[in-house]
Amino acid sequence: MIPAVMPTYARADLAFERGEGCWLVGTDGKRYLDFGSGVAVTALGHAHPHLVAALKSQAEKLWHCSNLYRIPGQEKLAERLVAHSFADTAFFCNSGAEAMEAAIKMARKYHDETGNPGRYRIVTTEGAFHGRTLATIAAGGQEKHLKGFEPAVDGFDQVPFGNLNALRAGIGAQTAAILLEPIQGEGGIRPLDIDYLKGARAAADEFGLLLIFDEVQCGMGRTGKLFAHEWAGVTPDIMGLAKGLGGGFPVGACLASEKAAIGMTAGSHGSTFGGNPLAMAVANAVLDVMLEPGFLAGVEMRGRLLKRRLEEAVAPHPNLVRGVRGNGMMLGLVCQAPNGEIQMALLDQGLITILAGDNVVRILPPLIVGEREIEDGADRVGRALKTLAAS
Image: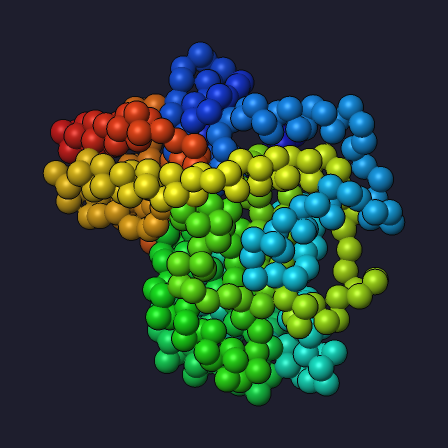
């Protein structure tokens, strides 16, 4: 008999009743150190007082009015995102998948507007993840996501990860854009190197393409800069954001240059709930915190500490975990043993983590994590691996 909640998730038999900062409390009263952040969503931890106050204040005023009218919080958030990014304009939605759908549509519309309607294909990389809609699973190209949903939406050409020659070879007369995650999240915390990102920008310029970055998971401060691509000194034409942008409240955004957004006129795209006053109040509160002087530098510094302590914790157990990769607060334990076994051992130690492809366990703590909690988390990793090794 099918349960009332559709069984589309392999859920752990664990439920939480409250959270504070980096900690979650289960319905059984047990405390857990949250190094998963709801898959990089609760970037400022649980029940952050500034976010709570912003949501409560807005909830007493106006929840929804639709995009048929001006929404001042939307205008404020757009102006702030534009001021701190490459972009000239922003479209607001509710999720990362919606942000990436907007990016895909925008790339096609750009070429239609500029007299090249036959250019609609987008080059993506192996191991990518861009969402769960029909178009975004086609963009990701992973069989496990596509199976049963064929035929795949046409218009996406996959090339090997991290191979610039393959990327260039994948460009054809119908290519409209290149779509990349600066750091693959679901694919296993796999960063693209700086030279690759620079080469992708050069290829896009050379062939008249748009460069799209998916920063749904790696953006919003997770690497110690507001956006992960800043480390490479390159800029995209379009970028998708979500997850940490709302700190736990559903909100997504598609940022674009004026050039890329040329076709995005009235009626070209829309969202009933996107950019609603509640979401905008919380997202603006998130930016209040992330744009404070020293906040991102602190994330970068503590991210280095976290990586070093994790490397020390896994070093005695190379038969279980062969290393740590990633940047900032977006790290992965590269497992030798099945990553599910590692994750369950960590959970037994009260540490919440997230699985990823390439046999990786993701470590995605809230960006507010302190040094004491980093030490605590690394100690739990060490104990979990020691227990597994002895079993």
